[in-house]
Image (tube, rainbow, N blue to C red; front, side, top):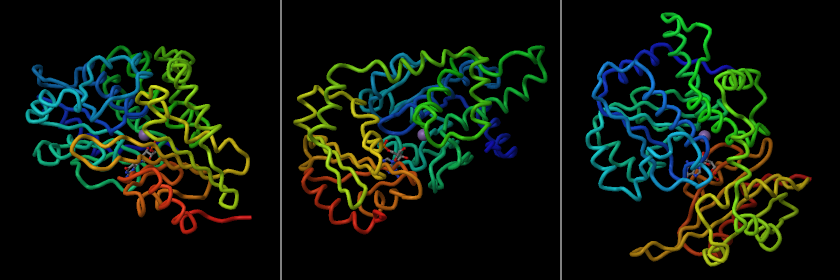
Length: 363
Ligand code: 5GP
Ligand code: MN
């Protein structure tokens, strides 16, 4: 389905951008390919175009915490500020901000401490997102749960604008997008659809991809950069998790993998090393639900470990209600997340106690 942006909202967003002096682009914690792609595409677009009337403006991209190294190749990553590592600088940028552009999240809670400061700020906010039920915190909202990714909405946002501009220029036959913008958008489309293996059947998606290729993206190189640059440790950790740690609950068509902080240490775990692991049990023919729990050691001053939980499912088997009602999270019907504070054993107990209620038992 084609994502149609409301023209009044578009006009409002353009005006806010034109008037802003100090723009902050931000995206969700533990940034994935769509978070990185949508935020960086906006960053490049704002840097590269002439639609800002203020020439003194400053555009900053702030993410709450570290992103995986396999995104280090993305154009513009060197400009990203990581709040957790550069708190003072980020706080001063946020204090100065007169516009926030938020991509790929629906609730200020998903950007941690940035969210608290952002909500407290009187600066206007533009939201570009594809998660269900967004919290009403933005002045302009482009919220499309039916979109493949936030990057798809960013594509529409940017190209709508370029269409308008292109009619005024002689470049009417040229590509709609600069290559860097196109590369970032493709990364978001590719990662949020599992390399076009789910949620990716619309003609419009492939029309967008055609336009991105016209803009010069190296599609196969992007795949290679994201999915074929793992460390030996990462691949061995995946092997260990699947061979030793995967439990199957056959009556529930359900798989559970847990990894403790000690186990992760053994494989020199780095951010992103378990990305995609939760999808792998779904490769088994009669597994329709997959859950993955990863322990993060307690931070100094806090007594309990954080158990980060990922949920995936296939077809008409929502997992977001389980994630939200029991694990303080939420998400899409087939891909959700949550957390609890305690031990892995406690998390597994809660999981086993509640699965009867939230997992559809079928023959
Ligand atoms: P992941 O398992 O990749 O961390 O998360 C999968 C999806 O679940 C994310 O794209 C996001 O939509 C959602 N999600 C993950 N964690 C949370 C959370 O704590 N709260 C909410 N509302 N959604 C989450
Ligand atoms: Mn996304």
